[in-house]
Amino acid sequence: MAEVPAELAYTNEHEWVKVDGNIATVGITDYAQGELGDIVFVELPAEGDETKQNEAFGTIEAVKAVSELFAPVSGKVVAINSALEDEPETINSDPYGDGWMLKIELADPSELDALLSAEDYEKIITAED
Amino acid sequence: MNAKKTTLYDVHVAAGAKMVDFAGYLMPVQYRGIVDEHNKVRQSVGLFDVSHMGEFTFHGPGALAFLQKMTINDVSKLAVGQAQYSAMCYPDGGIVDDLIVYRHEDHYMMVVNASNLEKDLAWLREHATNDVDIRDESDATGLIAVQGRNAEKVLQKITDIDLSSIRFYWFGTGTIAGVPVMISRTGYTGEDGFEVAMPAEEAPKLWNMMTEAGAENDIEPIGLGARDTLRLEMKYCLYGNDIDKTTNPIEAGLGWITRLDKGDFIGREAIAQVKENGPGRKLIGLELEGRNIARHGFAVLHAGEPVGVVTSGSLSISLGKPIAMAYVRSDLAAVGTELTVQVRKKEAAARVVKTPFYNPKKS
Image 1 (cartoon, each protein chain N blue to C red):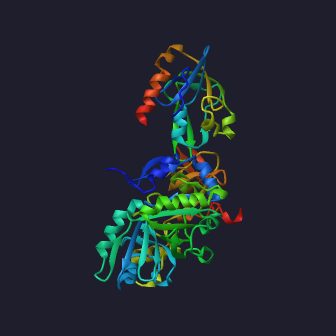
Image 2: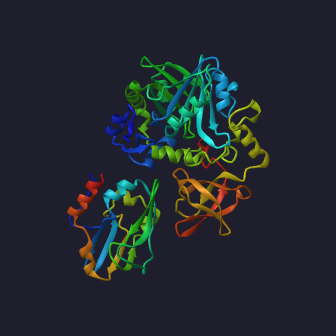
Image 3: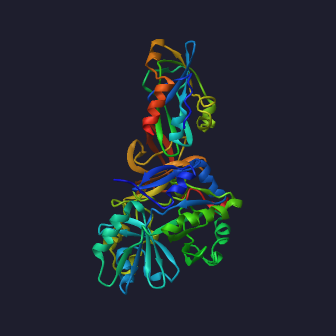
């Protein structure tokens, strides 16, 4: 069973969000990495780029499938996890830790209200399985 | 439609496989992960359940003549105990299926793709003569592939067939633990290895025996995901991706199994025409710059103009870079030609390379 940490917020598109002040750290969930299988490439925006809630900010390539990444919140990208360039498999092994992708400076904290709780997200993945 | 299960279904689930519907069968796509499984086969040995594939037998005095008419390779060249990669074509040269023909003492056998099983059987029966008896043994037959440099060592521990005497694309019959088996030195990975046919109900027992016999070589079960990345590195065609009814054997690079001089067969005239005029496009190997993967259906461009289409693509796990198979215009098919692949909104640089992409014997 995929791990769904209680303290994080989630999207329908299987991203997780951890909010610290006005900075949101974003990655994909354990369930998503499991469904994708071995991840071989992740294409992220550059620092300084703007994200828009629910719009694609990058792509993730697994051996068998490619998937778009959707921004859980709007804002400015203040950091990207550049270690993923050489070691994208970190997303498989540690999706909530070293497999983080972006840090976004929130443009509108009220957007966080649209995110799912761990409990709600768990319902979605249980229904998909 | 409910997907069918092979007799190894429970074994796969117990081994932690992720099961998917493939060609109407619930099959393991991966167990631990495609990368691990791929490397296992390249470095030691792996086990594949390929029981979903179809097996037909052909008995009767007309069997040889019938197979000569239906397939494009020369069946008359086969000795008893020998196998042959071949294909069936439509009159227009399009491919019905690619397959392997085996010559037994008193009959022939054919192994076909699971996805084409019903279609192939109907096609064969439609053309059958009274002096050939076609039997569909697919449900009764289990098929396990043992692939990798340690395959012979592992399999020899449990069978009375002398495997060292079986050359590439030959087979022998004998037993494993009293179960009648046919073992051929064939496979879809480019590594040395075997495919073992057995009564379907015995497959779990033999699978477990192979697993035990392979323990000291760290044998692992391998899913369809790694099967695909392994075959792609060899540029082996996958029906439905790289070949289908709209592609002919010449453009697909299967001229080497097409024997236009063997006498008449279905598709011969059309294929001869393609060969004479030269194919308009060719199935080639591409290596991509960057890390994006060219997937089935992506356009291949030259100077901004579409000149072809990707049929299969993946990260080459052995080489660590993206590779693809693609049909491109014949004048752009030479090794070294610079092309691009449309990967979503951008063009990825690509180059036509020599195939197979990977050579197992060198490493």
